Image 1 (cartoon, rainbow, N blue to C red):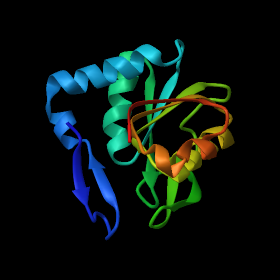
Image 2 (image 1 turned 45 degrees about the vertical axis):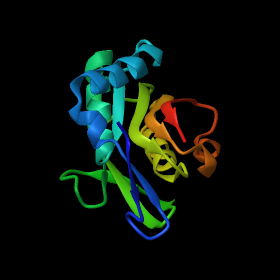
Image 3 (image 1 turned 120 degrees about the vertical axis):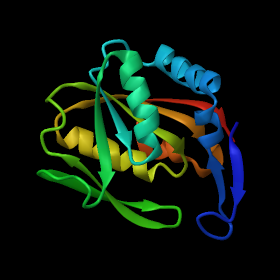
Length: 164
């Protein structure tokens, strides 16, 4: 259910594509149910990282009876925002969130499709903490263990369903 695409987005990268998993309703439901069953009770918000993290995160927010907060790429949010620059395995980028997206002390799960080097998720966590909220857990469908992304995410719980 996870397609391998060699040399995308650049030569030497093996991209793990979850779109076949998403289009199969039974597998997608199983994926969300498995993650939701292991996440902390009382989660107030799920933060989804653009773009596939929106899909996973919004479904998890529904399953957890929590609010959903999008963390977007630079320049995509219409209101006052804060941002964080981070390094990717093939470049750098900026994530932003609305300044009023999270309440102080709120418990947050950060969701994305894939954990690779950890830079994107660490940047999202930094934004969550800057807003005064608490990172309870990270939730990923896929983890590329060889890239050691967990090291950048500190002591928070990290859930992933498939590891390569």
